[in-house]
Image 1: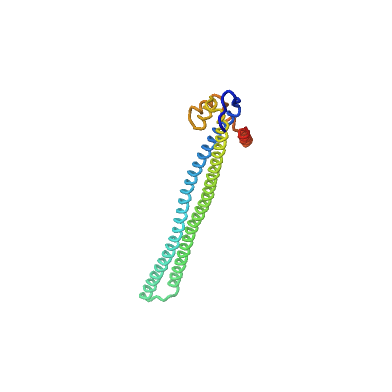
Image 2: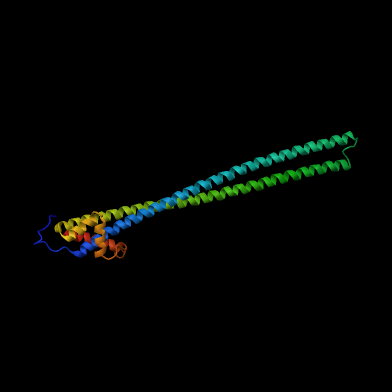
Length: 241
């Protein structure tokens, strides 16, 4: 739309200009905040990723310890059995060399050795199973914690994507507001209002300082979806001019 001569053009509508400028800055601020939130969510997700690795490593170590404990218990049981066989063989040899028969106190001595060997074998196996169960429980707990951290990580990544989408929408709204303001102010080229709008559209500090001096704080102007609807209605009003 070509600029009208100053003598015939109507005055610029300051309310439209102020609302447009506030809308542009508001959407730009929203986009920055959403992107900052997305970055924070990704940092949090990376932290959960480190937790997952630590929990998975701990679970694997516990499983390996359970295997080692089982093997060590079996080795101990075999060693105890070997010691019993050697000891009972020596006892039989001594009794035989002394001329004693496997009766009376001699048979009681051998029976006691058998009982002691059996009890020792059971203690070794029971302790091995107890230790093995403890390690397996640790592995299950670490696995559950890794799963929980994985769910939290997925949540943070989803939140980051949502923040990015919201930031992109805010960029689109800001661009639409800027295009509408530019089209409206083309009628008032060279006027103070046009210079103010141009400064804001260019993103200069001068233009933003002028906005601060002529409009209420941006935070008070942004009140959710109803404010967004008002800005869109304002844009449509410019396009109808």
